[in-house]
Image 1 (cartoon, rainbow, N blue to C red):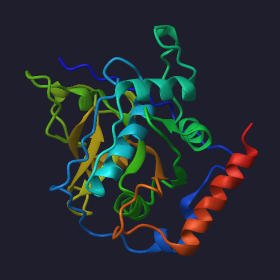
Image 2 (cartoon, rainbow, N blue to C red; image 1 turned 90 degrees about the vertical axis):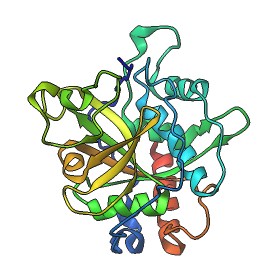
Image 3 (cartoon, helix red, strand yellow; image 1 turned 60 degrees about the horizontal axis):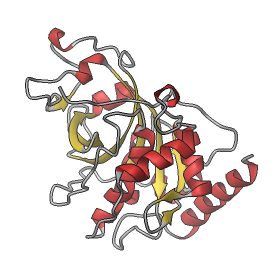
Image 4 (cartoon, rainbow, N blue to C red; image 1 turned 180 degrees about the vertical axis):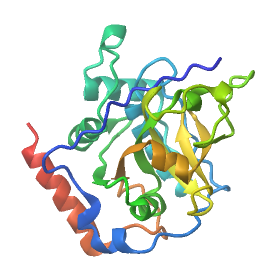
Length: 266
């Protein structure tokens, strides 16, 4: 059995939280019908999510690594970094399991915006914004233009099924054998993961998710059934040239939305 923890609270909406709707050209364009990155290793890590409910913090750490991988290099993010950020963003006290209660994605993102994601030799500060979960075109644009989409999903017990080697099902889908357990979304709990690429846009086309230090295949219909929130993170200093990243007025709108949100934070 492979240890895998969850830890994403139900989605919340905060007043004046940054929205990607202000990036009109970026979000309205037709996203690529296929986003293949098989030749790029995003090198996701577990980052403590096998023993702690810190998926929200691990997700940001792996987003940094995925963005760097697209530029042909890598950034060291280790478990201590993720645990330290988890403590700062949720109130977890290292060594006290009673305080290991998971996190709210928008609170965790607000902490990263305000205080940065501290690594051994630097602290990185993302811009971020949210998108409606029904806007799959927008979520694909985030994935293609900002390296990966930062998602909150409601996992079913069937999604947690393991084979004899401790591996998850090769592809997460909405149709599962009865022996895999309860297929009801949310029956296992909430989880934060990243959308990395996709082979098409049809319901049964495969997508690739980054979670628990690995690449997990799923279908679009699975994601639609599980999705409870979706966000884009922009590490402007890390994004490589040549990507379908936002430019000009779209960047200005995202910066303005984040600055306004910071002004309103306690």
